[in-house]
Image (cartoon, rainbow, N blue to C red):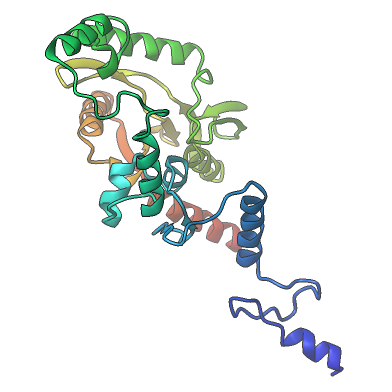
Length: 294
């Protein structure tokens, strides 16, 4: 073996991973190369990672702040849930918190910071905001009747234009399928993976995406709920599939939805299945094994 060949086989990445049989120009393994690329991009934008930066407990990436886009990429819907699951106190570097707090107390940024308002001023502000907006800031009280009308309107709108609403935290897109219509709109990458699996099963006759809406009672108001998939198997046997993260299955609102869905399905001799990420991965492994046996 030549000296150059020996040197190539003995190359190591900076993290200690062997680069044997890799291209001679490769000096880092794939994860380290990706991290170096990201660090270079941050440097070009003038972004520096603080010494006390936080580490994402899922992917072990160090960053100044674990943003909503980052923890939602791992399947967590809000910061409170993410912190509770991993027992975190904050998602931001302490030095960054101190710097932001100091900036907010300066007169140029917030002239009313720390100012004590009189009862007359608070009452005047509250009165001026009434019926001027929604939520807490607008003091707009949504009665059960109003919430029911909103739910009916939103459901009808999405049924007419399913691709009109896009959530920037989920990969909604049009995809082509064999088990459903030639082109369907899916609201997440998980739904896309489920349809890709169902395409592999000969027992599946047809899949309807967002097949119907049913009313359910929650928080003293009637809402409308649209399940993800109606799967028709040979027989025919019908199953209603709802794709949901495991940590949201026992959410009180979802519990109310699923109870209403099960009552609706029982009247039609249908089955209900809640599909989590673990179920999707299991189905993908089974279909991959079946394809290797063929």
